[in-house]
Length: 328
View 1 (cartoon, rainbow, N blue to C red):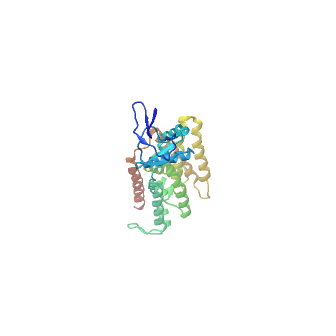
View 2: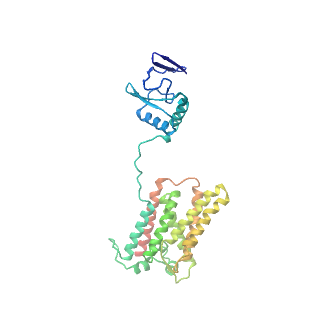
View 3: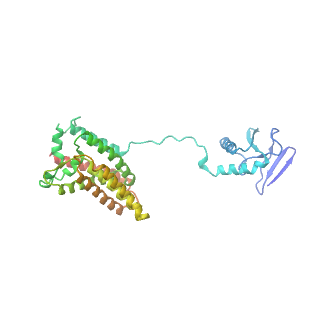
């Protein structure tokens, strides 16, 4: 790079890359150097403003002049190298540039919340809070009688649809809202790994399998209701899938999700005098088994998005069919 000064005209040139003539402003000391990235002679006003911010942040002295409708930056000779270095470093880091703010991302309602809103709406029908066209106005006790997991009627009279209908019934509002609080969390976490449709389908299947095992285990004069069996199936699914994924990096890492799942089961699944401990345990075991099967089928990928909606629709059809049989 050479510098030629002649009649107030400064000419900077390099091998095969001559720069245009530029008249120096009288306000600029004679030995100060133009600052830039060494590549471009004309830059936008926006980029020039960013260079000014860079020099200011690094406490590099500079002068800003106007010449021929353009703004130019000059720095002392001793600071020319560091100024070019900082400006070049800024240009090489796109993440540091100031961009106009992007509009906030649209936040949709989580699908798990929508599902539990529907469950709340169904509880309102069963509790007599509101009616629904086409359904007979039954009392809460009558709904419980028709759909509860009655061991005698399920095992002896083969009313196996009760393993599904019992998941949609709750003894009271406290029972319902406690299940909604825990279920929304677990189902949302499971959705991140499986997608909502598949996660919901696996959760319901785990709850149904847990109820089937409970019917086979319990004595005849026994009855229960509630979505909690499916919630612990969801917890088992989460623990199993996460443990198998972590197990690729060592067996010890696989124990952490299983231990966390066991701790949550001990904290949430054994509270209350009227708690069906066996159903919770069977639901957890069913979830662990389904999680293992899911991981064997899809060890490295989530199910495609195109099957999520049909899977969720399958859950709705399962409940509709079960209640059709119960009311028939």
